[in-house]
Every structure is written in C-alpha cells, then in structure tokens.
Image 1 (tube, rainbow, N blue to C red):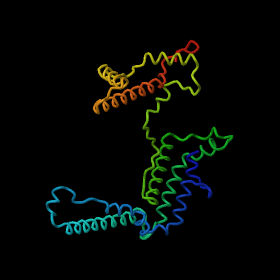
Image 2 (tube, one colour; image 1 turned 180 degrees about the vertical axis):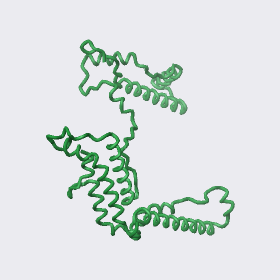
Image 3 (cartoon, rainbow, N blue to C red; image 1 turned 90 degrees about the vertical axis):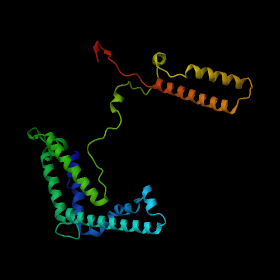
Image 4 (cartoon, rainbow, N blue to C red; image 1 turned 90 degrees about the horizontal axis):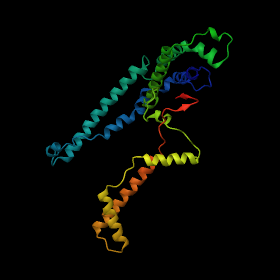
Length: 278
C-alpha cells in the first residue's frame, strides 16, 4: 500500500507522483535566480570562514591589520564568485536543460515516467490483491524482492533529488539506522503491574546475588571517622569538610547505582512451559 500511496495519480492525493506533476506545471517559477537565492546559505557560509588564523600569519601581518582584513575580504569575494558560478552551472546542467533560465519540464517528465515504470511491476498485485478483493487474484503474480527494492530505491532517489531542488537538503534514506540495541527489549520479562509478593521475594533474592559497588574499606573508615567527629561537635577543618562532602557524594552515587541495577529485569533464560523447553 505504501507503494500505491507514493505513485497515486488521484488529483487530491499527496503522492510523489502529484508532487512531481505540480513541480512540472510550475516549472517557469523555478528560475536560475530563484535557485541561487535558495542556495544562499552556501554563500553566507563563506563569510563565516576563518582565514589566516595560524600563528605564522600573525608575524607576517604584524602592523598590517587593515591590509590583512582587506586581503581576506578579497579572497572571500573570489570564493563566493566561484561558488556562485558553480551553482549556476549546476542548475543549467541538472535542471534547466534546453530552457536555460528556468526548470525544463521535460526533466521532470522523465522522472515521472521512471516512477511509473518502476511501479508498473507492483501495480497489479497492489490493486488486485492488497487494496481490493479480486476473484482472480490468484492469477496475479507477486512482485519479486528485487522489483520492490528497485521501486523504493527509485523513490528514495527522486525524493532526495527534488528535496535538494526545493530546499537544498538531501537527508532522506529508506534504510533504517539502528542506534540502540533494540533486541534488548525482547530479552527481559515485561510487567506493567505492581509486583506480586512472590515477585518481590524474587527481587530480594536478586539483590542478594547482585554485584553491588561499595566504598573501599579505607575510605569507608575515613568517612565514619569524619562523621563521628562532626556528630560529637568537634570543629572540622576546611580540608576535612571538603573531604567529608566528597565522600558522602560518592556514597550517594553508589547507592543510586546499586538501586538502578536492582531495577533491571533479569534476562530471559531457557524456560519450561507445558513440559517443553523454550
């Protein structure tokens, strides 16, 4: 169904096909000047460039700060002019074609034809098997993995191509980027309810087996000594106050860490259900 939404020709649909049609119908509005303005961020980025910042330049330009600034402005102006020519050439070669000054509709027509061609391999199966119940659907051959992959690769290419035209950015990818260890959620027991008494007992057993982090013995003795001194009303030096504060902070962090560890569910191991191992 996703393929059908992308290639839908209905006038009211928000499909890629209709987007390309609207771009083609308004081709005269996408001019070389508009394209340059759209790429203005590439030109303004040149103004933020830092040139001649290395220490050796300080010696070279010492006492000639105005000349240095003037030279940097001239260099940036030359770079801007070069980039502007490259953008214009890019527009003419990729988009303007025979028109020269604005988007050539035939460029978009070719991409529309390409989209239709790649969708054709999927169309019968989508229309007669997935979208609608067809008595003769058994006669419809399912598209191959290669045909499906080719269609979506074409869609990804076209979306990036026209995103670059309209916004100057190409970031779309249909390939998912897995950042987190997503399988971890399936390796622990799930429970959204309040633990039963039996579960709480099991949690206590887990705590007893848990590898907890404790303050090293020598630091623990030092902490107790400082706390006793404070409790008995003895005056602590500034150094002892800082040491006591630091040790108490470390203890708090260790307690919080151990509590977090205790809340982590156990990994699922092999379990026996109805006499079968899973």
